[in-house]
Length: 237
Image (cartoon, rainbow, N blue to C red; front, side):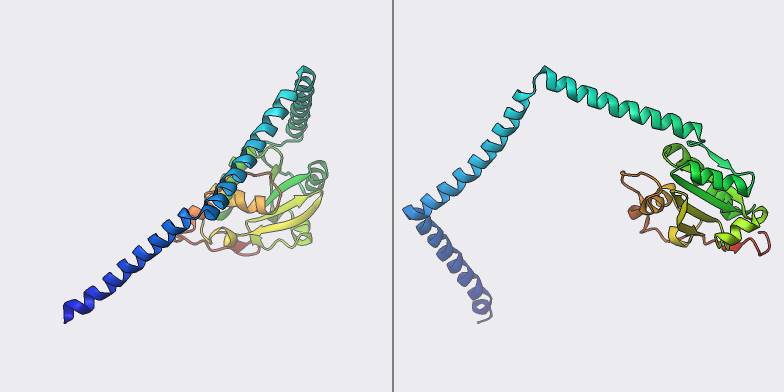
């Protein structure tokens, strides 16, 4: 009795499979079904063929004059980019530098379209931020990367409401658009990667970044060391 109960569903499934197969065979034997399938296959094949013919035709229409126009356009794009790079380098892009005074800050944000300014003090968290910004300054020549001592720039720090250090002021077109305050947005640890910071700056559109970040891969890692965020009004660590 036990064997009969176990085996019975298998026979039923087998019968259903055989029935379904016979239905398919029967449908395939139907001339109308075959005609519909053939039309669908031909339609898809025709669409693919038309697309290929269209692309081949476009390539064949490119004569020497067209190629010369494309070449000239590309050369102009390269020339403009070279001019931009020269202008950026002349403004101090490509290096991570310190601003000597508050007045210089305003001159820098007026001269460069995109600026990342690190408000710092002499402590470990700010040195960690320095390390990553120094790398990014070389990778993103389109943006000016600078730092300023918050304790020696009290007017500017108060004007921009800088309290927690490190804080990054993200400036676009001479206007502070966003802030990265401490390490909270970077996993709450001083062991965040340069790619994580890069992704955060890209989110604020203060750098041009189209690559893949390792931020997603590092999310699975648990923070191993948290940092006590400090303001410049507290004791130095």
